[in-house]
Amino acid sequence: MRSFNTILVISMFTITSVNALAQGTKKARAAQVVKDMQQVADWQINKWNTDGFKYPKADWTLGACYTGIFALGDLPGNERYLKTLTKIVEDINWNTGRKRFYADDYCVAQIYSQLYMRYKQPKMIAPFRALADSIVAQPHTEPLNWKNNIAMREWAWCDALFMGPPALSYLSLATGDQKYTDTAIKLWWKTTEFLYDPAERLYFRDETYLNKKEKNGQKVFWSRGNGWVMAGLVRLLEGTPARHPDRKKLEVLYKDMASRIVSLQQPDGSWHASLLDPESYPIKEMSGTGFYCYALAWGVNHGLLNKRTYWPAVEKAWAALRSSVQPDGMLGYVQPIGASPDKVDATSTEVYGVGAFLLSGSEIYKNILK
Image (tube, rainbow, N blue to C red; front, side, top):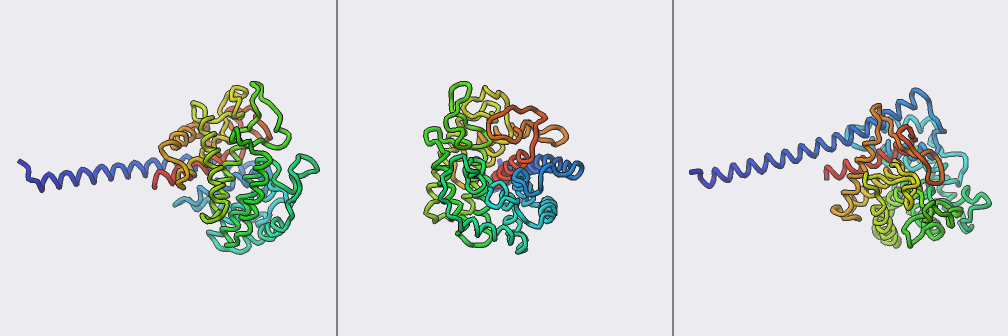
C-alpha cells in the first residue's frame, strides 16, 4: 500500500507533467502562428525584392502593410523584419506623401513613431512631427460634404480613420505630447458624427453612400471600410490615456461595433465584402476579415471584450485567413483598391491585406502566451 507521501509525490509529478505539456502546447501553437506570419511576410518582401514596389513607398497601401510587418518584427526573434522595414523607409528619408493634409499620405507615419520608440533616433519622427504640428494648428471647421476636394484636408471618408488617427496617436506615445492624440480624438468624433449609423453600428464609406442601397435593399456598408475603422480605433485607443475624458466614450463605440461585427460573421469565419448583403458577393474577403480579426483579438487582449464571447470569432477568422494563404505564401481573396464592396478570388491580393493578416497574427500570438 502506497504511503501518503508517495501518493503526494506522484500527484505533484503528474500535475507538473500536465502543466509542462500545456506549456509546450502553448509554445507550439505560438510558433505555428509566427510561422504563418513569416510565410506571408516573406512572400510579400520577396515580391518587392524581385518585382519592385507597385506603389510609392510612402503610399497608404504600404503604410497599412508596414504596420503588420512591424507587428511581426516586434515579436521575439523576428527583428530582421524591423531591419527590412527600416531600410525601406530610410529610402524615403522618413517622409510622408506629397499631399500634406491628406490622411492617406501620412498613414505611413504610424510606423515611424513605432520604430522611434524602439530605436530612439530623432530623424525617424522629425519630418512627421513638423507636419503633425501643422495638422493640430488647422481650424478643422469645414463640413465633411464630399465636395470641394475636402478629403485633401479632413477625414471625410471612413478609411481615413485608419490612416490619420493612429499616425497622430502613436506620435503622442513617441513624444509624450498629448496634443496629437487630442486632435485625433476631436477629428475622430467629427467624422463619426457624419458617417456613423448608430442604428446599424457601422460607418458609411463617405457622404455619397448615405442613401445607396444593396441589391437586397439594405444600406451599403463596406466590409474593409468598417475594418479600417475598427483597426484604426484600437490603434487610437493605444495612445489614449486611461484618464482621458473621451476614453470611455471611445471604448463604448468600440464595444458597440465589435458586437455588431461579430453578428455579421459568416459560417466560414470570414466577412464578405458587403456586410448587410453578403450574398451580393458570396465569397470570403480577407482585408475586412483581417482587420476585424485584429481588432477583436486586441479587444480581448486588453480586457475590453469578454474572451468566452469573442475569442471563438477570432479563432474562426484566423482559420479563414490561414485558409486563404496560397502554398507559396501569397494571401488571396483580398479585395482590390476601391471604395465599396467588390468581387475577389483566390488570386486577388494586395499589400494592405498582408498588413491585416500580420496584425491579426501578432495579437493571437500574444493571447496564446498570456
